[in-house]
Image (cartoon, rainbow, N blue to C red):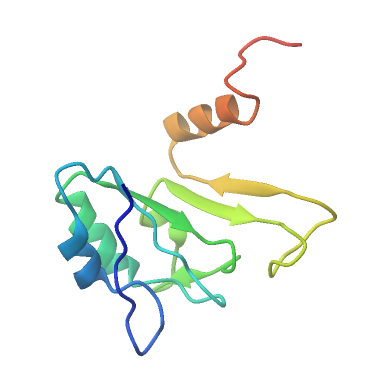
Length: 122
Protein backbone atom coordinates (compact mmCIF):
# COMPACT_ATOMS: atom_id res chain seq x y z
CA UNK A 1 0.00 0.00 0.00
CA UNK A 2 1.52 3.36 -0.96
CA UNK A 3 2.27 5.93 1.70
CA UNK A 4 2.72 9.59 0.90
CA UNK A 5 5.32 11.94 2.34
CA UNK A 6 4.87 15.67 2.67
CA UNK A 7 6.77 18.17 0.57
CA UNK A 8 9.22 20.81 1.68
CA UNK A 9 7.30 24.13 1.42
CA UNK A 10 10.42 25.90 0.09
CA UNK A 11 11.20 23.49 -2.78
CA UNK A 12 7.86 21.67 -3.24
CA UNK A 13 9.90 18.45 -3.39
CA UNK A 14 9.72 15.41 -1.08
CA UNK A 15 10.75 16.18 2.48
CA UNK A 16 13.18 13.42 3.58
CA UNK A 17 12.15 13.74 7.23
CA UNK A 18 8.43 13.15 6.60
CA UNK A 19 9.36 10.38 4.15
CA UNK A 20 11.32 8.74 6.96
CA UNK A 21 8.27 8.95 9.22
CA UNK A 22 6.18 7.07 6.65
CA UNK A 23 8.56 4.11 6.35
CA UNK A 24 7.11 0.88 7.72
CA UNK A 25 8.31 -2.71 8.05
CA UNK A 26 6.95 -3.54 4.58
CA UNK A 27 8.49 -0.55 2.80
CA UNK A 28 10.51 -1.81 -0.16
CA UNK A 29 11.24 1.46 -1.95
CA UNK A 30 10.82 5.22 -1.79
CA UNK A 31 10.13 7.12 -5.01
CA UNK A 32 10.94 10.83 -4.92
CA UNK A 33 9.82 12.94 -7.88
CA UNK A 34 12.30 15.54 -9.11
CA UNK A 35 10.48 18.52 -10.66
CA UNK A 36 11.43 21.36 -12.99
CA UNK A 37 15.04 20.17 -13.19
CA UNK A 38 15.40 20.27 -9.39
CA UNK A 39 16.23 17.04 -7.55
CA UNK A 40 15.03 16.26 -4.04
CA UNK A 41 17.50 16.29 -1.15
CA UNK A 42 19.14 13.06 -2.28
CA UNK A 43 22.03 13.24 0.16
CA UNK A 44 19.68 13.11 3.14
CA UNK A 45 17.17 10.72 1.55
CA UNK A 46 19.73 8.19 0.30
CA UNK A 47 21.49 8.18 3.66
CA UNK A 48 18.20 7.57 5.48
CA UNK A 49 17.25 4.69 3.16
CA UNK A 50 20.68 3.09 2.95
CA UNK A 51 20.81 2.56 6.71
CA UNK A 52 17.39 0.84 6.51
CA UNK A 53 18.28 -1.13 3.33
CA UNK A 54 15.37 0.38 1.37
CA UNK A 55 15.61 1.05 -2.37
CA UNK A 56 15.59 4.60 -3.69
CA UNK A 57 13.90 4.72 -7.12
CA UNK A 58 14.14 8.22 -8.56
CA UNK A 59 11.53 9.69 -10.89
CA UNK A 60 13.62 12.14 -12.92
CA UNK A 61 11.09 12.46 -15.75
CA UNK A 62 11.20 16.24 -15.45
CA UNK A 63 14.84 16.55 -14.41
CA UNK A 64 16.87 15.35 -17.39
CA UNK A 65 20.55 16.08 -16.80
CA UNK A 66 20.01 17.22 -13.20
CA UNK A 67 22.75 16.83 -10.61
CA UNK A 68 22.61 16.98 -6.82
CA UNK A 69 25.52 18.70 -5.05
CA UNK A 70 27.46 18.43 -8.31
CA UNK A 71 27.04 14.65 -8.56
CA UNK A 72 24.95 12.65 -11.06
CA UNK A 73 21.68 11.19 -9.76
CA UNK A 74 23.01 7.64 -10.19
CA UNK A 75 25.52 8.35 -7.40
CA UNK A 76 22.59 8.26 -4.97
CA UNK A 77 20.72 5.18 -6.17
CA UNK A 78 20.79 2.42 -8.78
CA UNK A 79 17.46 3.39 -10.36
CA UNK A 80 16.82 6.73 -12.08
CA UNK A 81 13.81 6.73 -14.41
CA UNK A 82 13.26 9.16 -17.29
CA UNK A 83 10.27 9.74 -19.55
CA UNK A 84 10.38 11.02 -23.10
CA UNK A 85 6.61 11.43 -23.39
CA UNK A 86 5.81 14.39 -25.69
CA UNK A 87 4.69 16.65 -22.80
CA UNK A 88 7.87 16.14 -20.74
CA UNK A 89 10.89 18.44 -20.73
CA UNK A 90 12.71 16.20 -23.21
CA UNK A 91 9.97 14.74 -25.38
CA UNK A 92 9.95 12.43 -28.38
CA UNK A 93 7.35 11.45 -30.97
CA UNK A 94 5.26 8.94 -29.01
CA UNK A 95 6.03 7.18 -25.75
CA UNK A 96 9.57 6.52 -24.62
CA UNK A 97 11.64 6.23 -21.50
CA UNK A 98 14.94 5.14 -20.01
CA UNK A 99 16.44 3.95 -16.77
CA UNK A 100 19.92 5.11 -15.74
CA UNK A 101 22.03 3.04 -13.38
CA UNK A 102 25.60 2.62 -12.29
CA UNK A 103 25.02 -1.04 -11.42
CA UNK A 104 25.80 -3.76 -13.95
CA UNK A 105 23.36 -6.09 -12.12
CA UNK A 106 20.49 -3.59 -12.30
CA UNK A 107 21.32 -2.87 -15.95
CA UNK A 108 20.95 -6.59 -16.70
CA UNK A 109 17.59 -6.71 -14.93
CA UNK A 110 16.37 -3.66 -16.85
CA UNK A 111 17.42 -5.23 -20.17
CA UNK A 112 15.25 -8.24 -19.31
CA UNK A 113 12.29 -6.06 -18.35
CA UNK A 114 12.35 -4.07 -21.60
CA UNK A 115 11.28 -7.22 -23.46
CA UNK A 116 8.96 -8.77 -20.89
CA UNK A 117 11.70 -10.96 -19.39
CA UNK A 118 12.41 -12.79 -22.63
CA UNK A 119 15.99 -14.07 -22.87
CA UNK A 120 15.84 -15.59 -26.35
CA UNK A 121 15.38 -14.01 -29.79
CA UNK A 122 11.89 -13.91 -31.21
